[in-house]
Amino acid sequence: MTTTNVLVLGAGYTGTSAALGIAARTGSDVHVTLVNPSARFTERLRLHQTASGQELAHLDIPTMLEGTGIEFVQGCVTAIDADARTVRIDDERVLGYDVLVHALGAVSDTTTVPGADTHAFTLDSAHDAGLLAQRLASLPDGAPVVVVGNGLTGVEAAAEIAEQHPRLTVHLLGRGEPGAMMGPRARAYLERALDRLGVQSHTGVDVVKVFDHGVDLADGEHVRADAVLWTTGVRVSPLAAAAGLEVDERGRILTDPSLRSVSHPEVFAVGDAAAVRQGFGVLHGTCQSGIPTAVHAARTIARILAGKPARPFRFGYIHQPVGLGRQDAVIQFTRPDDTPGRFFLTGRWAVAYKEAVSSSPWQTFAITKRTPSVTTLMWRRGGAATRTV
Image 1 (cartoon, rainbow, N blue to C red):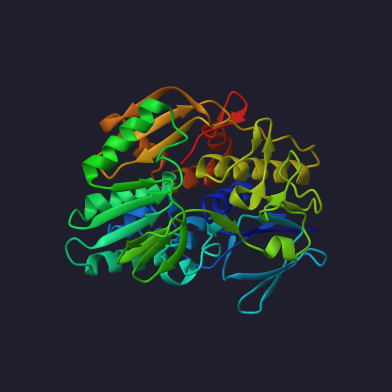
Image 2: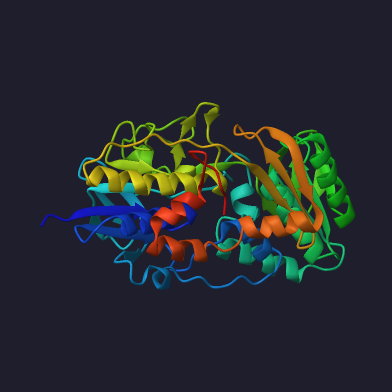
């Protein structure tokens, strides 16, 4: 019996979903290997809580994989040889594959502004968030903290830090208004919540340099800070481009409608690593769109190995959930292209909704191990994958 080796790179939300989905849908003639630098699952959606000093549950990846037949390899991917169909990890092991799922995600882009890579904290991992938590805990009363980037990640981080550390002065810096992608009423609620938490919002500003004592703005102003958190812009791993896979201007793998690389069809790209085009444009990196790509890739790989044709991926956004500390939130419901719809949710009902959609994926992963068809339905609505975790 010939064994098909499926190699999944990255054990985040998308990589873990893909690996479990493939293993649950295939038989003993398919061997799935999952590669990740850490054995601990990183709840990226909750790293702003870690950064503010809150403790999250320890989720062990090998424990989750027990009974699935998936092999877990702990290591950092250092190179992909697309011609030889091999992957090298940092201990110099070389892993071969017949099918590759690229789910390495993205990290904060601290390369565009001088000093950001040296002096700014990020939310790229539990370790990084923990370093910021230690720093915040050591600061004296009134110490200024700057969050650069007022997208949803920056807003959530600023709100969480302000709520958990009311003795600190939190500044939120960005070009546009916080919640700019939301409708006017939801955006107004978000702004009032930030005011209530004491977050000082600065809009229409560009950070041009980061120091250990603050940031310089394009207009010449210096904003002092004892800690700087960088949440603006992301970059993907350069490994795909270096391997010769066709990528877009941001280094994301270009995919066909079934999420296969347009240049190397044995490679599937999911989540932030993929440039997935839908009728309204290319998906932007969120868990809301990422996990459905992983579920679709798993289904497609199983179909292809069973001799069935691949099906196109279809997706539509449904919401923009934003936590405003532990006691408040705002949910902007959207059209499929992510533009704001008429309805939004605030207050305790929004908190309950946000907790439901961003709760630990462990229960969903456990269901995937047993009944992948049920999990598929959880991510789909009207033929379009829509739900977040």
